[in-house]
Image (tube, rainbow, N blue to C red; front, side):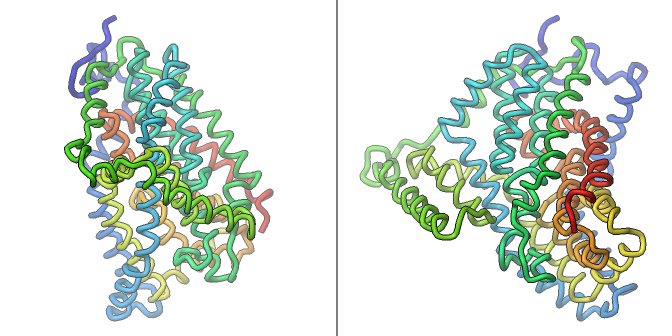
Length: 480
């Protein structure tokens, strides 16, 4: 059968025997259709959601918090908004530096060469998922872009359902929340003085990545998910007649457009400085020297600032010229608008909960339904639900952390295990939340609804596996 191709969009609409005919749909396809309907018709923009959550939190504070007066609520809200600014900008830089690194010419050419390893649909989906997971482990902004870019490269060589392939890349990306070195929650509790290091605020100590991301129980849980997810994708590969493939001509045209640059100043003195490798090397050498001195004296350690710094230096080094890197950062900044707008208001919610005492009230309620062993699992379930409304890792932690950490301390539950349960729950919820899928589909040029249809199945399968781990395995091996 012919591949369905057009020049634009990158993937065509509906093939002759697609999922569009209700009578031919399977139970799974009807479930996917219901999920798409909910996303399209019922869920508002995430910024509207944070407004509604702020109102809801305020009403709960008035009804249940010991200091839930309008004056205290407004004061806590204001302080919370501005108290999270540093962390919000750090999270934006994580995305921007990772995005800029992924767009470096050597990375692009490397992805093109890697894409030729795919010889069929199964090898294609395994390749995209694996490379995406590796990139995500290093930096979630890097992995977000690499998965989408590699999907486009693979689609040039292999006849495959494009949304299915992009969904595999996105599914590898969501693992960042609890298996990546740029995990917002793990880095927050590993960074001294961070406003969202809620564990330090209660215990006056930080939790290093060796106790969270690099712990044995977390690595084994992540590895199990990484093995299961590609298997599930292979099992749910669209039938021959249902394939919606990408148009090769459209893919190549989009790349040529994105590679166009401004060379009008290239022959001027300013242009030569902007294109000078020596100028770029000033920051690269200085930064590398600082890290070498710091790590030699105090040992290798990673926090939010270090991760951002490393990716900044790597991106500048690989782009080679200031002009190219500025252009890459400018492109990356285009997808950070929602983060810049929403993060401060998540901090406002955290401020209301802290100022009014609502966090303690919710923590006490948690204590009555949870035990030392079940708190990580209950935190995982709550986190998956909260992610549907708060799709940002840092903002999510700002809302759930203030009542979960005190509950963990009271019950004697594992602080690293409970914290990473929240991170893992965010991973599961992100498979159904279109907020982070939007930049992916924008890069790939494919419909978000079809992508989320595939990730729904991953949510039900891999999400259940991770939940099982936090119910039965993590409480045993994470300690207290």
